[in-house]
Length: 366
Image: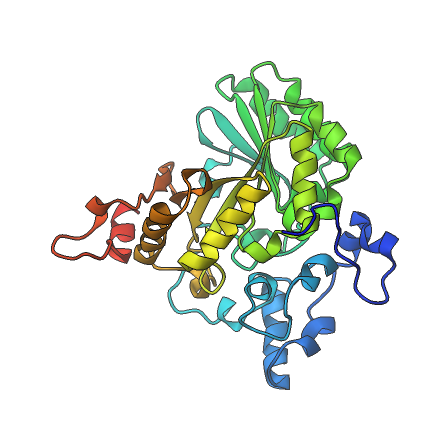
């Protein structure tokens, strides 16, 4: 692997000081699909249809993440994660807008309380990149919240009243699209609640805009330890020197970094691709935490992998790689059922068949 401290060179015509400035990256990710349409293979009519997709599910990608992909190749695993696909609006298997029924567990706007001892707050609806497999695509059309006190105060008041809550997950959208000041105000308010012992941040920023992780940010986050950081690398090509450096800075600040991948068709649904990803995470000291079965979000049929295939991949990985590299393969279920583990054990094989159980098993546990 390359030296973690050698950062990616900016694309031609872009000043280095702009390229490595996260605010420039974020500002220039605010783009409709039209400027990029010429980079997509296909006819003019197909481009027009893709523009229609982006009206339902907006398109957004940072210049940094765009530079990692082969934009001309529809099968490129990074492009596949963020470029609109006609299958998002022309789907056959169904799916729902809110597969985890988060609205049922939202006692106040923006706060999800599914488990007794922890809750999740939606710090903002904004992201630096709109991932097409996102389980909160329903929020993309909403006006982005900005971490204001008016937005935060009802959530803080709820948490103060629920002494059983010991851990708060700050998610979104992506909370690292907020300013240091807004994020610090949020973390300080949470840390001031006596029974809140642990904070956690969920962010894909180290993957899609790693220059956001600055010394100033890490110094600020360090004040609110114990604080854990979960991110989402889905493919080994995302583990660049820039991304490795961002994770290293968090780790040096005493903030553990874990990874929550999503099993995605055409992205990481093979033993070899997944093994390379997991080895890469271990090399940069990021813990492989979860591998999620892709949620049945409306318009994500083309991403979902058969559960039986996922179990097969995990079975093969378990036989061939270190236990330190192994994530837990889980499906997140609605109705308070939580994250159901899908272990790659032989008892999961159907009687008289050496192939692990398939989609019928998934249907049963749901």
